[in-house]
Image 1 (spheres, rainbow, N blue to C red):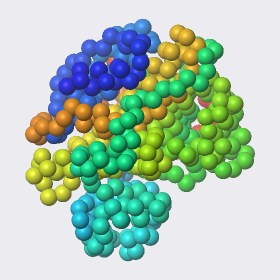
Image 2: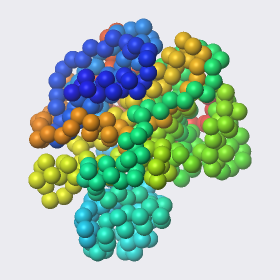
Image 3: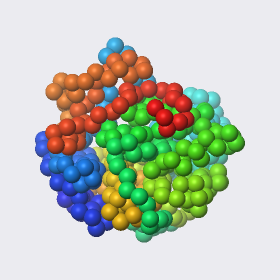
Image 4: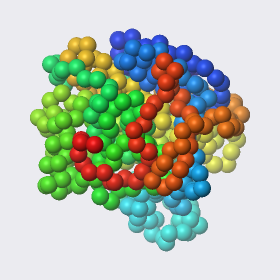
Length: 440
């Protein structure tokens, strides 16, 4: 099924031929979807664009590709923070299931303001059990929280948002300029305005293969569970885009950027004054690649969302439950929508650079977790297959990464170019630890 996915990705990227990619090794994650082939294909798509841009031959290690769809850092003498807030997860409702995403404190507070109970999982479960799933989902979203009722694939196909996503391309391209000078991947200035998890996966790859990635976060945001994973190779600064001096700093950064990758909802940047026209005035030749959770059209285009929520909405968790004969939702074995979209974003950035260098055309590209879910589902489901992966010392890269929390090793990266892997210039570290400046 890898070729099935690659054919759709190739069509979405456009007519330029990709570079040479060979796939080695084996592995299969336990799933009732073709999750392992999907993962291999998205990594191969990014590898093909790297190969074409750099004039090298790429090799993708399937086993390590699957491992990089999960957490890759192995601490030496310290522990990673917990990935999930204690209240996050699936809850039985009066008529089905709902998932609450409470990793961000303000999202947890929003959910509790609707459910009206203390910070206690049992108390939340008791209250949620009395709610109809869609009514509770609607109320939490209205309170600026994050929740998703579980749908079947058939229900999602007939849902207004499911119908909207079905009409969207995997990658939506738009030309914004036709006179852009060429740029090189080495030293490419990438302004990273992304959060967990797809966008940071993309910019992490770009940082490993030569890009200068500067991540910008607002003052109060944190994502403790994944920061050690996704800050590798990047400088991380903080700005408040509602503050006039910080806006001036941001616009100065933007004016010198070659690429901006962001995960703001459709209306969020526009409300800050940075719609498409505003961005072009500041940076006429900017390659702007964005992602959204639920697509860029339809009634949920401005809805907050995460991988685990989109799996609930789109029927993936329901199909897993049915195939497993389980009494609760059964998601994918990894957050494949996030990671897969991340590699597709990286491929789109690299393809946009090639188009700019070949023709002077500058583009925007838009992707979404929900549309990536449709790509995964397009190969159909099956009985559960795959034994998982048992990690061995041979899977680890030899390099010791001196993170801000202590030494660690990572799983060897799945992409090599002419035998060489990525070279990240900085170890992982906390957010907002660097100045908001392109000068290193």
